[in-house]
Image (cartoon, rainbow, N blue to C red; front, side):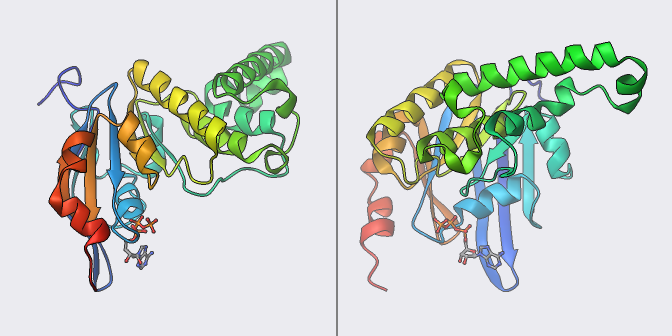
Length: 259
Ligand SMILES: Nc1ncnc2c1ncn2[C@@H]1O[C@H](COP(=O)(O)OP(=O)(O)OP(=O)(O)O)[C@@H](O)[C@H]1O
């Protein structure tokens, strides 16, 4: 069996999804390594989100999924997250009755929680853990570019750019080996876009494997190491941003469709 040191961080082989008679995805084969950014692009309805649903085991699918060389095709979504495969969704998903800081603490709970017995019989330990959880949440929020003054607010009361960063921070949680991002740049303007690009490069430098679905071509062409192009559920091209920009099949998929 392949070792995790020599294996891709995430690999899909023959990945396919059908919704009833509709084949939304067929025969996808790609991999992403630690410290690499893989872009996934394609026209609306090409199958990009279905690809994430298939990887994270939210839909029935064909093919294999491997995480650090280990076949995880049959592993459930929550266990995949525990193994470091994390996903941020296209729509921001927060606990809206909690503050930004409390949202962050909630996703860190598994790493810092003590359980009921400890809370009752060793409350000092619980207090110390809570203090560490608060410090960790604050540190993560700052690292993801969410300023201190936003921490006590509700997520929907902070600027939209910070909401997008918060959704990535919540997905990252206590750490990720592979991070799947679905249109992180949607709705972002200039300064927020620059902040996002800097963050993606930081996560890459940390050795995280990033997979980024994106419609924003300038962003994906500037940050991705390689790009997979989907069209009508099929992987029509794979290569560097330069290869992809020169690929006639890609231009055809985006521009040349007559029907
Ligand atoms: N739950 C579902 N039930 C039935 N069909 C679905 C379902 N989810 C997606 N589809 C269909 O599968 C195809 C692929 O959809 P998907 O959302 O994966 O594409 P996408 O590339 O992410 O699109 P977009 O860029 O618009 O988000 C589309 O034809 C879509 O209508």
